Image (cartoon, rainbow, N blue to C red; front, side):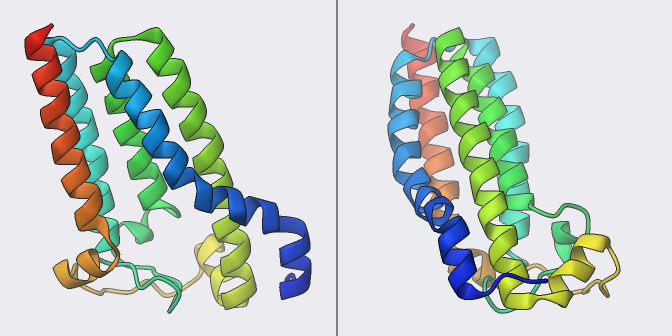
Length: 181
């Protein structure tokens, strides 16, 4: 049985609040990671290569997503239930490699595990509430898959251009730090 909106707020309201807070917390964790990072040329090249795969997955997913309007089943959503979060995890792994610092690795790993778990759990609960059986069919793999094409406009509407810009700026900053060290 699906949760009513009242039960949802009582059971997952804190989770929803935490997932909204995760972006602000991410800026703090990112600043600490950039400050403490000790990249070198090898860690930079290898880490950016990994992170680029994650950002490419996020761009691909955002170009298919119609957030709040449907259960998306095209693009990477045909293969992965949470491609945006999975892409963020890959980016995080790339940052760990670039940083070449155990303390940064612990902080970033803890942040990613906690916040991405919370976000995925909250999102699945919300999708069950809003889309009911359609979402359950998607989870079971019994939904008809969409053949929608990637859209740059949809990617921009989903705000992924900001993540892409942050990714590029972060790569430049860490590259400069590697060069100066």
